[in-house]
Length: 186
Image (cartoon, rainbow, N blue to C red):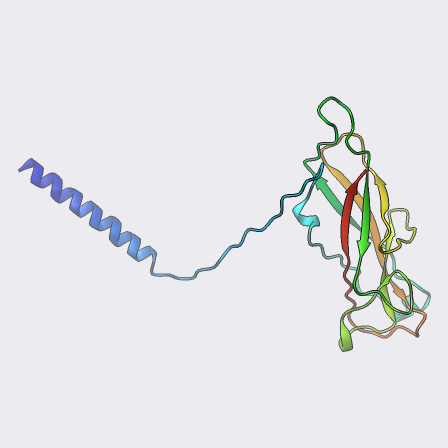
């Protein structure tokens, strides 16, 4: 009799568990999560927020651009988990070369990123990349940035601004430009 009661109790408990699972599967919403990443052979990892960035250059008047440029906006490429020595105190890198490239360079002005917004975009306006000291960056040319000590976190600061092009007066509209960067530890 005791064995029968135990069997009945087990059967009742398993029925409740199965029924509870079925109720949970009724679905009141669902989604999909994709996790992405890349393993690289480098002294530092690139912080996830620096892999695909968006830099807001603000809303700039055409009058401001008639005088040449908007105010520069800083952006950072953040490196983390840096192992900058070989374990014996000998540095494996003291600087990192950063090369910016773009398939969309304005044909009327060298090294200015073209506005890719098309017809609804501002005309005669591009985006210029600069070093932290606001000197211009030549696209496709490696820019050496010193690494700070043996810190495991490194921050590479650059700037960008909107710039009027020599092809005419700037017109109102959206501005969007794209660039990629490649790191080379030295």
